[in-house]
Length: 161
Image (cartoon, rainbow, N blue to C red; front, side, top):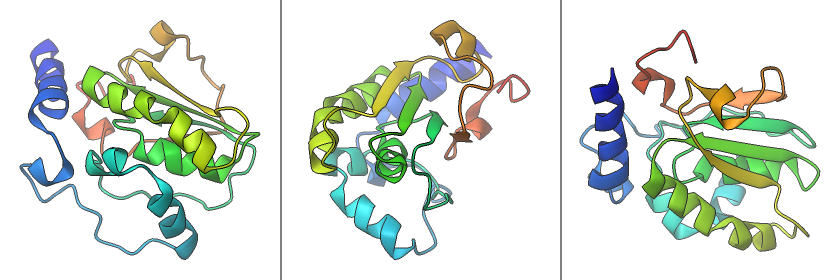
């Protein structure tokens, strides 16, 4: 199982440089987003968007004030989308095990805080494995909504997730 985890880290962290580098067409967004979501996505930093490896995301458009956890947040695309949806009084935590992806996500926190007109960031990214959330101080039942975009399928222990 450790080899699988390392392979996933290397593929998403070292081998892939942009979405077009994916070696599969399984990870593609094949549907049209609602206008509200499209508008928010157009505000997300280009580097974050270029490193999006998800398969589309079905999410409610009304999340104001909620606390949301994203399992396998990657470069942060979905986190930044949700950051706008929860508003300045909500909070988003992204968890990923890949340093390179977390570097991209963390690099753009200030950009999105300013772009969304917030006085302070409502988002944070933590390094960790989605099967071991307690190791990064994420408690059970501490979020209103948990999302994951094409990541749980990569876990070697889906029951723990």
